[in-house]
Length: 114
Length: 114
Image (tube, rainbow over all chains, first blue to last red; front, side, top):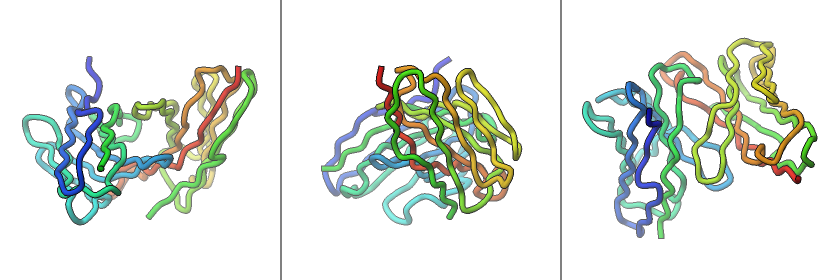
């Protein structure tokens, strides 16, 4: 029973390019959360999605960031025109319910912007 | 927004010693959780707490949900080298538009000397 999968594990982009981060939730999970972790800091909530719906995007930057969780396929976190400050680890969590203990985290994508 | 203050930031201990770390919040949470994160990986849930005053154990780990619902602590007894890692507290409100999100502390880096 595979856990939460994220790819790529590492991503290098130059300033101004686009970054696409993918998250495949655990089988049967229909809730997906994205968190960002800056070096030596805790995780910060970004967005919560259910299939085809954004439920809570209060942690998403207003510009350049978007997320989707289509009916079929993985959830995508998209960062347009990346800047150096976007360099961070991005974690996806999935759950079958909304309760906290059911959020299982993936291994993360480390984004480095040159 | 809600913030969690976690202390200490780092700890250096000898194998066999007990460890204690805690988190305080400016506002209440209805669920408190403790995670461990190894380098290059996502957080893994250690203990979840659901009721004010609740004391829960998981092997050598013990955690408590503060009566005011604004704090929690984690104890690790008889530490071993594999306890090395970063420990995070997290809170979940559990209701309302932003109820599903987890709010994380800044982490406690634990080093265990054999």
